[in-house]
Image (cartoon, rainbow, N blue to C red):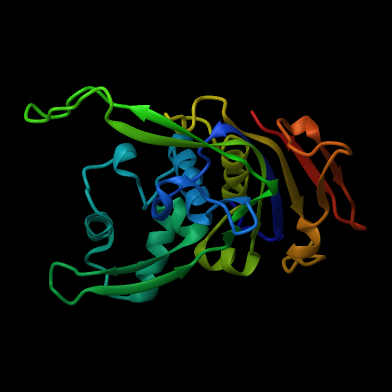
Length: 281
């Protein structure tokens, strides 16, 4: 496996159809929006989904969800101590962590845990894969449904049929995820060309095995993935210029989009830079 030697930029267009794309716990778990009504999906949420797909594809990852845990460790500290607890040299610690866990050599990680000898460890790893917060192309409309719960969770509870709750969803939104893979950092963490291909597959299949009551099967999908590989380590163009090659605009006469077909999507070009356009699943 050869280390990544050429910079990569990517853009994914993600459609959301009557689903809660990323609930905000500080706002009653309503889908995240900015002050202008544009939908948002946090970079942390996107990385969580990428990590889940890494696991599905057979890779070892460090930051595991409790419901997807593939080992016996209930915390990051326990997982780190079991694999690296006896290592004192910080550079060796970082090297072995990157070698063992794909998400560490991709996104980086801060290891700041107490060890069994009470001395603790503090090691920081900067990862080559950066992901922006996703933002919808146009403002989104949020629907809220009032739901009832009449089943008691505990024997002592007495619930009536008018016990109320709320469920929120984006009526429809087309979101743009932007990101890049930095060669200089890739060579420090040992990130390889094969790792880049796996990241590409994770993005293409981002919502596979991700269904829930807030995101029913088929309500979120990757519509298109745009993947640029530069011809040098520093990149022929800035990531900003490359990301802006994907233009998405509402078609004339459409005020409230209800599907991807309501948008006109165009891909511009830069001299000498090829884009691979991939359909989502």
